[in-house]
Image (cartoon, rainbow, N blue to C red; front, side):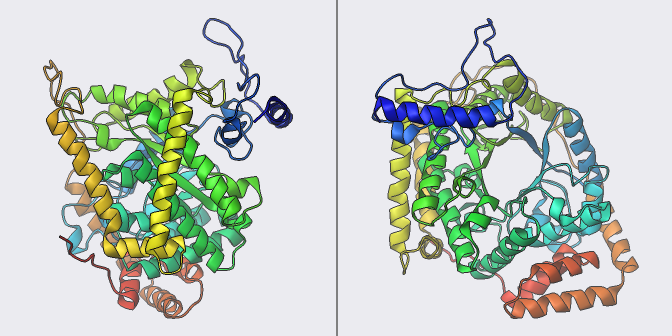
Length: 555
């Protein structure tokens, strides 16, 4: 770009910046030096067309002209353990300590669409998240928390749609109309087949449910984001940064194609898509990954899928620091790792953030560890002054080179995925890659390469394969009592005995009838939830219609 074009862009940015609301602050360094809201080149810069100004296509430097001067990221701590009442107490602690939103962690039976009293749930109830069996559990989970005022993220994919229906019904019981709800549902089934392995059915029925949810939210809950495309679990499974980025955005493109196949307007439904990324320990690579993600998404949405509005081209994302980087050895080192990873997410322009607790590699976080994780974000937000300047590393030779390199690697992966399909679409390529085990093998190879380097000492982890001497004592960790499972099952039995079973049966039958046809599943599923049908009953009824999916054995 020549100097005249760059200055014209600066003028456009300044006009948007002047009109936008800003936080009240001096925006100075700790020593009192006033800083500009953004910095750019003083003359010609041939790279600048790919970098640009904040709030302007290709959004490399962020979605908003003000950066964090307008609004800081949402502190959204991921939490859930035991039963709904116990988790409700933790949520109130998080909100009372300054958290800006909630993120729900579900236990394994819930993630697999099983009730707590299912024989396959034995020993797992409440252990890796909160147990949710029916809408009454959702009522307790958010008791005293106004769902019309708090944004809530729910990390669940296989049974995401019935869990969403329970959330809507809990809001109704609070007197909050569904149209007022704002939050995010993960619902990303592609990444389950690729990495996390928590599905209920074959891909096609899941995609049918996701399409129904997209239609419903576009019409009824416009602020709600029914899809959070997750790269986090792909990275945690062992992928590289470029693989995480490429596989995640490819999944996102698949969901865009799903929306278009339903006849939805891309400018209407695309703003309801959000993303969930990992912030790993390689500081600059992670910043570059986030910047490249925004640029790639905007270009594909505009040039491939025809999005015309800024909001439809925006990549909004939540970040969680890397669980896989935490170590059981010398666990207090995890506080440092988490702070570095959180700072990378912030400098990359994340829209919301969860910071892992130091003991999370050993168990669910204690309240003390959860508070330290929360305070880590608050120290970055309140003390470091990194919120004063938008994309402060923009223009760095290293960061820009890394951003370009990761983008190029991602584009090469997109081409491979599309070539695998039968019709050139991203969806066809993803489904073929799942069927052939291609994604899994790519991730496995990357994970093996990293582990080999770790064992040879080429990669060093403090406390694990270097600097191993320590004066630390064992941590006190949170333990979920088996009484939680017994009590959850007792309450569940009471609820079943007290409900109108005929109403439950009729509602489930109506839902199954729609499932066998082509109508939208959401209204009948909401009716089943209102009748207090359990998660397991809803999912089992659909398993009877659609069957179950078993991943083929591969060697």
